[in-house]
Image 1 (cartoon, rainbow, N blue to C red):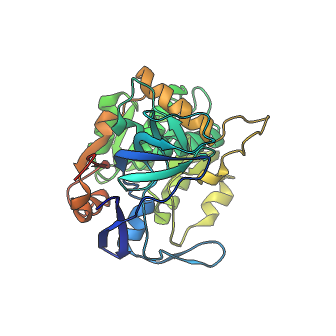
Image 2 (cartoon, rainbow, N blue to C red; image 1 turned 45 degrees about the vertical axis):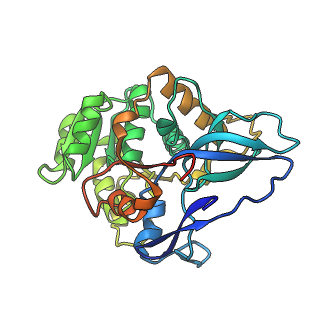
Length: 339
């Protein structure tokens, strides 16, 4: 097979297809993938098949779905008008799960990989840019008390950014105690809360002199969790919806109303547009900073990769990523140069 690519054809069903080798446009490049990362939220929804609706009424997921948007590899061919990339460059992008991907040079999620960053770590760049944007638009300040609900990959990244921003105390909350424990070991949080055994609201109030958190980041993607985030926030606090909640759930809006809580949606499209002079932190800028921070050792990602698969074991990889098997964080594919 010249160019194997993963395609989800139905809930819990995945196949390897040959995506072929299309000709390049003048501003396009072909990249041979070395590693790619599963997004447990976005791709997991296609894998599980549970229906949800976009704001225009369109039902998702649809099939077949060629998933993946966290890719790292080497440029092997460039179009005649390519200016910023050359054959042999290592790049990370929003390319999918395939041996070869075609990228447009003007894409918003395409970056050179610094020499000090390995390919596996660089696959986090697309998610890293999204999380950094969510932290920015929440606007936490030095010394603010922050609670992060959900300590998966996005929550772990959010905590590392928030720690760099000087937030304190920084409290990581999860039903799986191993996840806050990992963040504590990495120095990403000050306090970990096992929500399966402890009362997170009581712990947060104890740690904030009874006020509650200045900022609460919801990173589970479960709409049922928002009542908890409203309870965790102080009066006039902010809740940032950094996870991707696809399904409706009853929420007590009186909690938000009585505490005058500010609730912010942090979808990736909330990035400022390119060329915005008042806010230069668009998607390319956030991704570039993410990679610089990894190269400097300010962000630590190696411990966030829990599983490594080949495309031949894709079904097992997706089951693992959504938590249907062992507890997991980052689940990556390794792509050999040839079969």
